[in-house]
Length: 275
Image 1 (cartoon, rainbow, N blue to C red):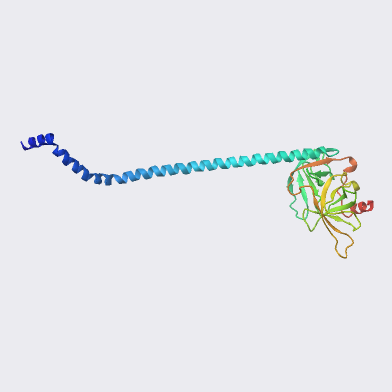
Image 2: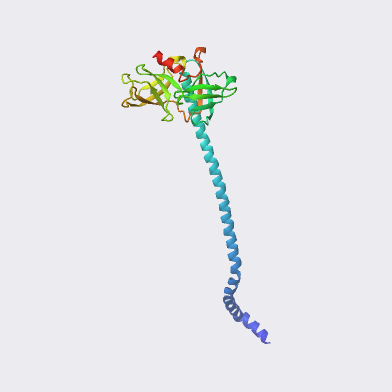
């Protein structure tokens, strides 16, 4: 009878709902605390997964950026290469006689010798003594010929002499590779009475049948008169980019121009007599 009365009172007045609500309110923190570890764990897992995805995506983006940067550099190099080829082609069109392109593939390990190796040899009709130029000026001569490659002695080698003349007035001199200033030339036997000034442009004179005439050689940079010396100390900056050029031109001159490499002791003296 009591239970029936309670059920009737609950249905009629809702006492049990109020009690149930109160108990639920009091026990809610307990449920929340008991569920907190799983909630925190799930949140941490979601955060870790999101971070891992971001890290992986960042790596992929970095890789794509690296590839894009390298592709850009390659395109820049191709543009520079095309520019150099255009300059070389323009230079070739201004040269009298037949020319053939070649590529520098190595430099001499001998620090006392200024030589470079090109990818043309006997099989390409290269002969000893041929003039070699880049897009800016005279570089040197073929020194040693092999079947598919050749060594080129640069004009800045201290054992090489280049007969030159001042483009302004035809004044002649001999340009030798400087032993004190790497990458430069020195004019030999220049007297104070000769009309050579700083800024003069020098070209090959054609004397001694060493190089064809009028190839650009360099520009006079300094002129110094040392007390007690009979000759002026004249330094020349070569026009050719000897340290950075990769593409060169081989000049195929007439048989009379295909002479042995100029030697300081033997041919040098005969050239001086021609002045």
